Amino acid sequence: MTNRKSKKSIDLLVFVFIVAIMLTSYSSYSKYTSSVNASASVNVAAWNVKINDEDITNSISLSEELNFNPLNEDTTKVASGKLAPNSKGYFDISIDTSSAEVAARYSITIDTNSVESLNGITILGYEEVEIDSAPGLDSLQNVEYDSLNNNPKITGEILLENDKGKVVNLRVYLEWQDEGTDAANNAQTSVATSDNRSISIPVNILVEQLN
Image (cartoon, rainbow, N blue to C red; front, side, top):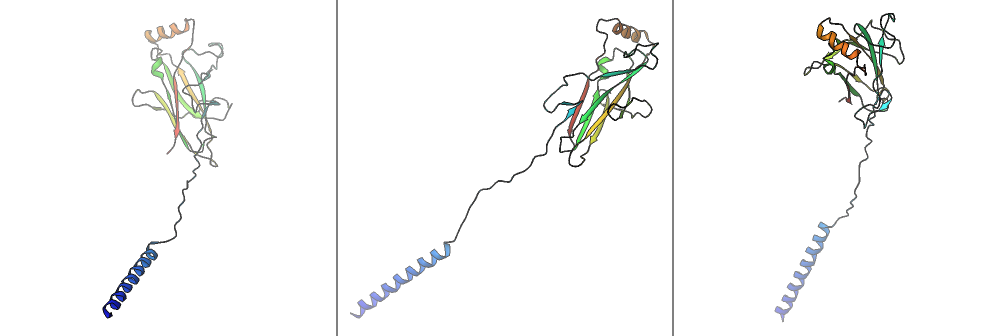
């Protein structure tokens, strides 16, 4: 009889011990948890570029050619508005980044090699001007020259003003020099006597973010 009571007591103790372990384990591994998904909103800086008032953000060429303006001081020798050997002229390029929210770098390459047969087409220099200002040749900046093909190049930076870009107006001057050789004279005469009577000089304008 005593043995049975002892066995029951032992069984009871074992049961209490097991229950105590279970309660302790549950208490040890249970906790409050919360989980949520989120996203970070980032405002992207705007990029917009206009060349001579034309939006080129998604374009590869201007719809209109750059307007060339001859500088004929003596109209008794060369008709007004025309270019001839030994005369000068200019064209304007307006780079507008006022709607952009990043600084920009520009590079303008003038492909004078494409008119190499017309010996004497020379870029004299350029200046930064106000819109509609009078042309002048007194304080021109020198152009750079591309190391690959020796074409003249103009480079610069447009920094932000009040968190926006701005407008830069560049005036590029060129001269059709008379080199006096038979080859040059023949080439120049050929252009002057053709039905088209125009010279097309390719100009590439690259505007990119300034890092």
